[in-house]
Image 1 (cartoon, chains in turn brown, purple):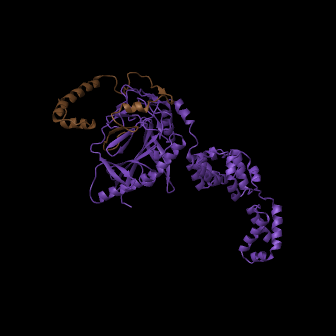
Image 2 (cartoon, each protein chain N blue to C red):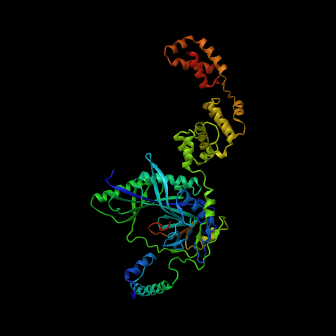
Image 3 (cartoon, each protein chain N blue to C red):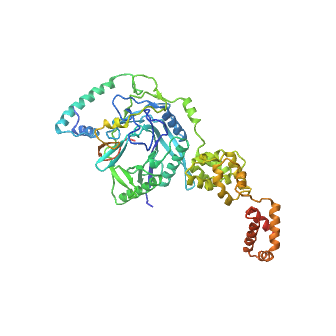
Length: 102
Length: 473
C-alpha cells in the first residue's frame, strides 16, 4: 500500500475544493489524506452489504411531504446572514464559468 | 451540406409545476422578489434535512409514463458534489444510480417520416439558485434553489437539427399537456443542452463530443447544432482535432462559443444521499397517477382529423391548449367541427388576443357555441354579421338568436321570400339579364347588388346568389 498520495492527486483534490495550497501544505496533505483514505477503506472489510446500497441506518421507506406551502424566511433576515448583498440579491465574487449542477 | 454524419443527443431540464419546492415547504414561484421564497433548507443551512415532496414523485411518474419510460419501483437519491456559489450545500441532490424513468421513447415526425427518439433515462433533482453576472459581482437569487426538476436524457440517436427540434417540440407538447410543467423556455422552466459529434461513415467510431449548454429557444437549438456541425467539419477538413468541450450558444453572434475544455471529465464524487431513505413507488401510486393524464396531443390530433377538421386547424388548435380543451367538450356533438374550429381560431381568437382573455373567461357556454356554429353553418348568420355582434356574444348570456334580433341582424333565409325579390329584380333589369346570358359575369354582381339593396342587406348572401343563378337559367 502506498504511504502517501502523489502531488498531482493532492492538487486535483484542491482544485475540486477550489482552494489554493502551498508546497508545504501539499507535502502535509499527501500523507494526511492518504491516512484518511486508508481509514475509510476499512469499511470495505465489513461483510454482508455486498449487493445492496446501504444509504440509511434503517430500512423504512422515506416519508413523503404533502405539497403544501408553509412559512418562509423573511428576506431581510436571509440577507443579514450574507456577507454582502446588493438590493435583495446575495452578492458573491464573480466565478468564471457556469454552474456545474442542474 | 457537410460530408459528415452527425450524432446528436439532447438533455432537457424541466421545472415541475408544484406548489412547493422539492425538499422544502417554501413556495415554488417565478418572478417574485429575489430571495423571498426560501427557508433554511433551500439556503443549505447546516443541520437541515430534506423531505421529498409527494407531488414531485407523482409528476415524475406522470412524465415517465407519457415518455413511455419504464418506472423504477425502488430508488434513492445521490449527492453530486461540486463547489460553486449557486449551491451552498456544495452538493446537488439528484438521482445518479437509480433514475426514476429509463428506456423510454418519444415519436416524432420529420418531413413526413415517423421516427422514435429513445430516452436513456429521466431523473429527479433540485434546481440551483439563479446567479446573474454583473461586471465584478455575481448576484444570487435563492427563489429557484430547490425548485423540482426532471432531467430527460436521450440516447445519441438523432442525426439532424430538424430531428432535435421536432423532439423538443414534441417533448414540450407532452409535458405541457399533461400539466407536468409550463415548459416556458424564455423563463427557464425548460432548458436544453445538445451533445454533438460528427464522423465520416456509420462504421467509424463516434467523433469528439461538444456539449452546447443552456440554449434559450427551440429554434436556437436547431441553429446551434447546425453551427456546431459546421465548426467541427472545418476542423476535421483541415486535418486537425479538438478536445471534448462545453460550449454555449451566443444569441447575438448566432454561433456557439467555447466555455471550457473538459480535460479530465467531471469529478462529482457521487454517493447515495444518506438524508433521504429509499423511495418506494407502489403500483397503486402509478395507477392513480395514470388516471390524471388528460387526452394527449397525438390522440387529439387523430380525433380532430377524423371529425373532418383540416390539418392546419388541427395543428393550430393543439398549439393552443385552452382552445383545444374547449374543443374537446364538443367532440361528441353533431355539429360541423370544421366550422367550430374556424370560429375558435378565427374571430374568437382575434377577440381573445385583443382582450388578453382565455376562452374560459368569456360567457360562451357549450350550448351557445353549438347554437353559433349551427347558425353560421346554415347561413343564418353571415361571417360579416358575426364580426358585428361577436363582442356581445362573448360578453352576455343571451341566446345568439336573441342577440341577432336585438342588434337588428335579421338574415332572410326564407327561400320563397328571397326568390320573390329576385324575380322582381330580374324583371326590372332585362339588359343585365341579357348581359349575363351573353357571358358577362359582371352582370350577376350588379344583380346581386340590387337584391341586397332591395332587402336592405338582409338576404342571406349565399342563398341569394344560388337562387339568382337558378332563376337566370
